Image 1 (tube, rainbow, N blue to C red):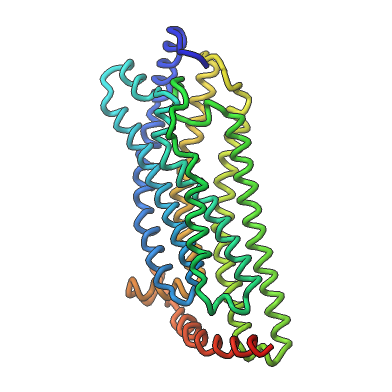
Image 2 (cartoon, rainbow, N blue to C red):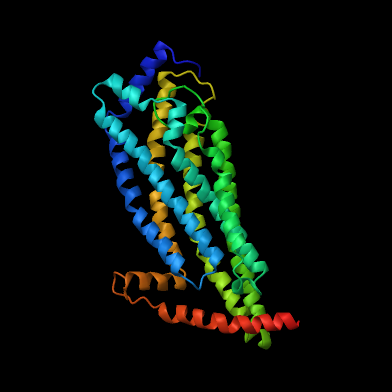
Length: 364
């Protein structure tokens, strides 16, 4: 669209006022603020547990912590968006002022959404980075668990933040105003293609995690038939590959679901809007209806964070670290947290096995 005409301004402001008539857009912002902020402490606590889980490979810990940092930033981004709109609604004194505060330009909208968009894309790339690290761990399982190879974890971490950098609104995009602050409205078809590509990346990462679990379990069965190798650390390393890769599957599934929901909303609500649509009452209604769904879908970010925190507890080493950090022996339901023996055994056998393994492969 070009410069907003007087008629379009009237339609624009009417759409803004109507979108807040039932207070749905107010209450959804309140819920977003409460939930997105509430999940930050558990996510940060998960980071501490991951850092303290020494039996998990250092690169896996680096990438998991990095993933949780991006998730925390995404939640803070949701809170920033919600706080802006809630404060704007509270401060407005008349309908004209409400229109000015809510129907901001595409450039200003991109800046409001910048943190959420940047962190969200970094989370997607972070899952791909973890898949790449797990591939390397599977291929080099004979020596990977006994070596640090920090350059892998650090390199993948730096890469994912740099790849996401172009999403930041450094340059102005457009002065066009829309009745709601949704970045996809300026180019819905382009955004649909982009979201589809991101979903494909997510699904591919999920496929990699599942395939690696089967590949490592197959190797475990093969190594159990060899009495010499069974006595060394190959079995331990393969079991660690299975355990650490398995915990990524539910995280990847949740992320795929979030992208699917967003794609469905784009497909059925605004995908048919042309790039330069004239703002009419009909098109404005389509945009505000889309915004109502997208603000509900935005709650998937904090809810998926809860799923991420629960998923990492699949690892006995991280559960053990959480138990020591929180100084608790039982789950809230009263069931004991039985992770001590597993984690201690892993720590104890790790050093014993690796020296024998190095000697064996060195002599081969």
